[in-house]
Length: 365
Ligand SMILES: NC(=O)c1ccc[n+]([C@@H]2O[C@H](COP(=O)([O-])OP(=O)(O)OC[C@H]3O[C@@H](n4cnc5c(N)ncnc54)[C@H](O)[C@@H]3O)[C@@H](O)[C@H]2O)c1
Image (cartoon, rainbow, N blue to C red; front, side, top):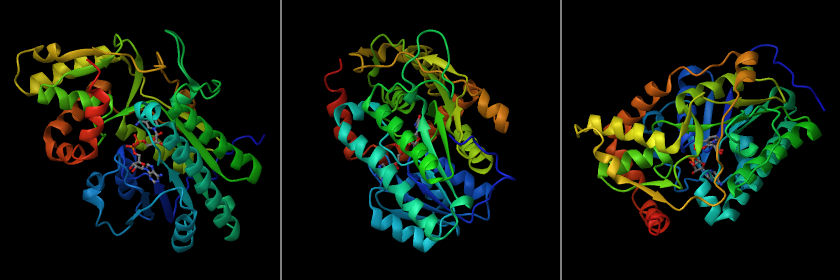
């Protein structure tokens, strides 16, 4: 097995393909890189599923170095044409089906996009970089999740050497895609990096995920569905810190290396919900604790992993990255953003979301 290699100097890119850029994390990555990497042209390839929204990038859509293409990562012909037209020297692959609950009701969509889609993209990148004779200078960056490591008990942290033990169709599909990416590195010499990140929170997150869902429901005085007894623990990272970690790994990551990214912020779901109630009630000038009555414990998620927590010391020691904000700062910023952007919330929750929400939460009382 090849040992990870440090780049000679920080990498720069002429032309980057970013997949899934209209989603939550991708939109933050694009906004950041347009600001910090002025030499780089960025193509955002996104199928605009229910989770993708061009409103997430409205502020950069007219940027000279930004192009949006609507399309599917499983479409090899489209990918081949894009590589030929834009001569990408790097890929940041974020496109995925990303919601665990949806993976329980529709696993095949996850296997198709997350495994076959990733393999299709890798294959086209390999062909294009081989034909252009630039494989050694290129980079394929695969963005993955800490959920590939399975579930922790009360103690311990996931490190890069923790054996994979995925439990949901979502995490199994992401674990498979990580393996395929590593296989392209070891078999074909494709330069790759992988990062496995903990739960993200921040602006522009689709409100099926815990934090925006709770903020929205507190504002609307709707029930706050909490799985089981609310004792599952997640390690939260502010999305803008994830975007900064992605930039550091893109430009300085060692070829063939894997980096865990985490925020050192472990919270039980129920404690996090109480924290959100406190913040939102205060901002809406409601008496303290008003929205606690909205908490509704619902039947636990099938196979719900108890605890995730990340040891991010490898990333800090090798590349010097650390989160920039405390959880209190990041969460306050996030709550303010959702309260000030009701129009965004209304736009992304029209149509499909209404149907999904009704079906998914109808029997969870
Ligand atoms: N959100 C988190 O907490 C978190 C944590 C760790 C890792 N990740 C990983 O980061 C990546 C981005 O996550 P996110 O939260 O921004 O997801 P998201 O669901 O908000 O966005 C995913 C984007 O991918 C697009 N997409 C889906 N299927 C596609 C296809 N077949 N072809 C092209 N585009 C497609 C969607 O339209 C959407 O814009 C994912 O790979 C996810 O596994 C997310």
